[in-house]
Amino acid sequence: MTALVIAEAVVILLLGLLVAGLLRSHAEILRKLDSLGAGLEHDHEHGTPDLNFAPSVATPRGEVTPAHDVSGTGPDGDGIGVRVLGAKQKTLLAFLSSGCLGCSEFWETFERGPDGLGDTRLVVLTKGEDEESPSRIAKLAPSEYPVVMSDEAWNDYQVPGSPYFVLVDGPTGSVTGEGSASTWDQLLRLMGEALDDTTKRKRRKAR
Figure 1 (cartoon, rainbow, N blue to C red):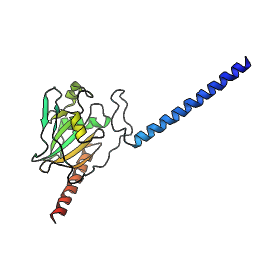
Figure 2 (cartoon, helix red, strand yellow):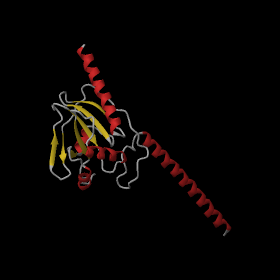
Figure 3 (spheres, helix red, strand yellow):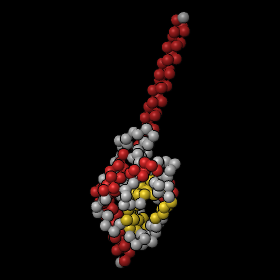
Figure 4 (cartoon, rainbow, N blue to C red):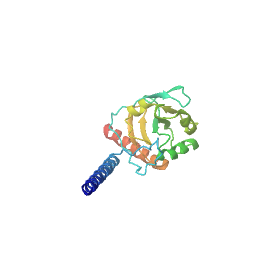
């Protein structure tokens, strides 16, 4: 009987050590995922807020990075397409989701009508119906700007998460800047930096 009790105690101790090791490994995996930016999007299923969300600087792309027209469906289910290539003005593509913690301010700002866009056109894009609820997107959708539900657009622009913004120069058909921001004012500053960088490149080429 004593031997059996000792054997059980040894087994319980070994199991405890195994569980502790697994927990440490799990924590290390989560830390590595966070460092790689896996926490950009809000957890839609469980509603857990993304505490690691932080704004990132807009990144001007290369001079010849091509843009893409966008197409998909609207929240009402009708097909919708927006011409980006060859447009006379610049287009700001706002990639948002319904459950993203950092997206709520932008949904509200777009409904009120954002200041500072000038001639730049605003288009809001969400994932398709497999990942987003059309009825929920319809409640969030601003009345003055098109909302396109499209997985293809997210893939075309290689969007890493939401909120994310891509500034496209229509006449050249190229991406001039991209990045994430936590407020509309910050986004305007990032857009300004991207526009300034594009102007400087054009001036250098003209010399």
